[in-house]
Amino acid sequence: MTEPKADMPRVYFTVPGVEDLTSVIIMLRTAGATITDEWREFMVEGPLTARQAAAVWQLAEHVDSGSESNRLGVRVDPSGDLKAALDVMCPDGWTIDAFDWPDADWSDTDQWWMEQQQLQRSRRG
Picture (cartoon, rainbow, N blue to C red):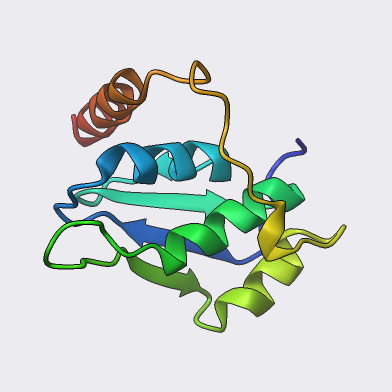
């Protein structure tokens, strides 16, 4: 993947206390998200592959499997429509069905989550 472009939108996700954290972590990783300095906030910046863009869309549509049906907080910067932002971030085009769950052994979700938390703590000093 190429370096992020300054003129591309960014998408931010805030992860509330969700019961289905493993699925959320897999989608965040697939999207190429990185943690920010804000509590449980992750950022995705382009350019993106079609699979990454579809993962961003899936994250925005995700409803927690728990009884509260929590959704992730989603913010596009600069402010705008998520689909339009993804169209810019993925100039080669994308479709919602480009998302594909990775193989079961693809990642250690707990390890990735801990690494992201450590990265955030190191940024805060």
